Structures are given as C-alpha cells and as structure tokens.
Amino acid sequence: MTPKRSGEVLPSAPKRKKAVMCLMEKIRVLDKLRSGMSCSAVGREFNVNESTIRYIKKKEEEIRRSVREAAPESAKVTSIVREEAMEKMEKRLNLWIHEMTTDKKGVVDSIVVRLKAKEIYGHVTQGQKNVKPFSASAGWLARFKKRYGVNNVKLAGEASCAHQEAAEEFKKYLLSVIREKGYVEEQVFNADETGLFYKDVGKRTYITQMACKAPGFKSFQDYANLLLCTNAKGDFKCKPLIVYRAQNPPALTGKSVNHMPVHWRWSKKAWMTSDWFHNCFIPEVECYLQGRNLAFKVLLILDNAPVHCCEELRNAHPSVEVLFMPPNTTSLIQPLDQGIIKAFKAHYTRELYSKAFEALKSNTETTMLDYWKSVTLSNVIDYVGTAWDSIKQATINSCWKNVWPDCVQDFEGFEGVTESINDCQKYNAHCTANKWGRL
Image (cartoon, rainbow, N blue to C red; front, side, top):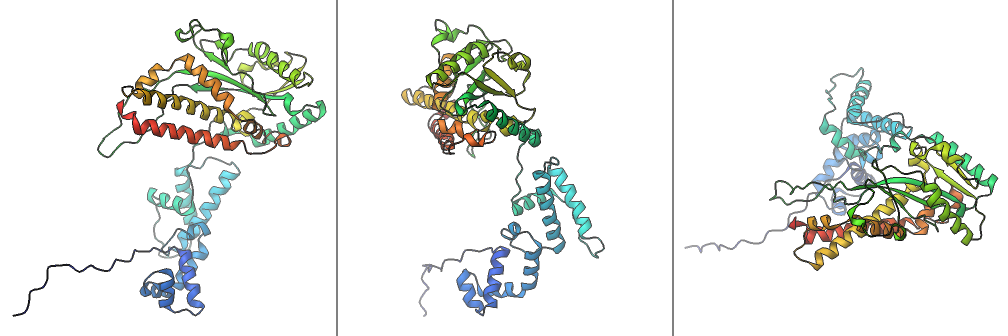
C-alpha cells in the first residue's frame, strides 16, 4: 500500500513582479539586441522573461515608429504602441497648449483642449481610410495630461490679466528715476495692503474610511486689513498698520495703542486710512534715515488702487516721491507680492498654530474649537508683530529682483519662507494628530 502524501505545502518560488516597460525602455532593449546580445541575456539584464524580449523584437518597427511620432515626455510614460494618428495629434496638441499659455493668447481649459484635439485629429486623418472615431473623452484627456505632464492650474486674480509689457516699461522708468535722483537701497520703499483672516482654521482635512464625512463647524470670518511697508535694502520694516471694523473692541480695553507692535486704525468698511502716510510712514522713515546718516529723500512705490488717493499722495511731501505702478502689474513686479506677504503669513500661521499646540498640550480638556474661541484681537496683534519681525532681511531684499535686480545681494532669503511653511505644517500636523478629534 502506497504511503499517504504529506499534508504539508511546499513553499513555492516567489513570483516575479510584473514589469511594465515604457517605450523608451523598449528602445533600449532593441538597441541591445542590435548590438548582438541574445534575447536571454537582454532578459536577464532587464529582469523580464525571454518571451517578453522576443515579443518586443517582433514589434520593433511599430515601437520605433511610435517613438518617432510621440514627444519625448510621452514616450517615457507610455508602455503600449499607439496609433500613428493619435501620436501625431497629441504631439501637435501639446505644442499648441504650450504656445497658447506661453504667449498668453488665451485661457486653455478642458473644453477648449478637447475641441482642439478633435480638430487636429481631423486634420491628421484627412484623406485616410478606415479612420477610427475619436471623441476626445474625459478619460482620454486624463491620460493625455499624464503622458505629457500637463497640469491644470488656477489663475490668480491679478496674474491672470497681468500686463508684461507695461511692467517692463515701468521697470525701465523706475531704474531711470533711481539713477537720475541718486536713490540708494535704503531710500526706496514699497507698501501694499493685504487681508488677514486671523483665525484661519483651514478648509480641508483628512478623514478615515469609517467616517462618511468630516465633522462640520462654521469657519471663523474674523478679518482685518493690513498695510505692510519695507525698503529695498531689507534692513527696515515699517510698523504694520492694522485697520479693523470697530473703533474700541473689548479685547483692547485698557491697552495703549502707542505701545502696540502695530499702528491701530479703525474703519467700518475696513479700508486703509490716508493718515498712515503722514502720521506713520514719514516719522518712521525719517528717524531711520537719520540713524543711517542718509539724506531724507524717499522714493515710495505703490499700486494704483483708488484708496491711495493718487493725486493727494503724489505731492504730499517735498522729500517723498511717489510712483504708482501701472494697472495689473503688481503680481509681476511689486516686491511685497513676490514673497514678502507670503513669508509674513507663513510666520503668522506658524505663530498661531504654535500657540494652539502649547494650549492643547498644557490642558488635555481643551479642544481646538475652544482655542480658536479664546484667540482675541490682542493676541492677533502680538502674533502680527512677531511674524513681521521674523522676516529676514535677505528675504525682503530678494523680493526686489523683478523690479530692481541691481539692489539684490543674494537669494538665500527664500529659505526662511520654506522653513516657515514647513514649521506651520509641523504644528498643524501635531494639532491634528493629537487633539483635533476633540472638536
């Protein structure tokens, strides 16, 4: 009687991981074969079966044709041989998108791309027989964007309609004024307004698979306007101006506005007030230039917003020359828009979340919602002052490169912006991981 087989299952050899080769890798395989290597040797080098190498060799003509017709970026991610008409159409479509966006001829959205793809496909296949229908579907568009690395980006309000030519003309005019009047980096200033939602709790969060939706709560809409001003040297920052909607908020009761790290103003519509120029800017800059043993002559660069009262400021002081940038050019050349405001808000967010982390760590019963409710306008003013003081001189100086390149000493300042954003993300992650669930 034959013995019974053992119930033990012998360990099987590990399966080879399936390798999907892009067209460029297949071209390398074909080049190896042309050099005289055998199919088995090439298979061992690329860690694929010999049958795969033989199949690639069989399709050599089609593969080489597809690579010739496709753009290099497409051949690096495409693994199958596609129709010649499709390769030609996508290559021309990619060039058309590049031309439209580079020369700013128009906005290219998904509808325009799909219509243009069908038009180009019709031209490519004109006169051919047995042409396959092409509908330019949403699925094709998604694959096309992946093949060619096409990204869909949001147009910024000012950048979308910025005038490059006007910006270049203003840049030339500014440089001529600086040379003619003999201004130095310490005497050239830029000021700009920005809005601050000072209890910005974010708009997105991660949830687990078990949760059908995120726990909702009404976002805080606490808002104030800020006016920031600095010189091209980067070694002097005017005290920030905060404009709030209420004249005497409860959080500031008993506090002296003269000892705050900001200038305090109020307006029901939260617009900038005109007395900043005479009562804040002039005294601070005059004191700064005297300390540097420099003459009190100043060049102030502003955008052309109506709140600046152009005619009033133009001749407001005999020692201050005010230049107004052309419309729709601030996103291109205004220094504060080139990274200074971004750095300030990154530092402010880091300060805000670091205080949140400290509050949550010190009291296990405190929730994030409790913390947001406890933040007062007095706290915000302190955070604004700390954030403004934290911006490095090199960061400010670097942001003048688009309008006055000769005054820029180096570009190391942007490292501070990156560090600020990374720190902000770190504090946010700590709060989210440890305490956010107690909302």
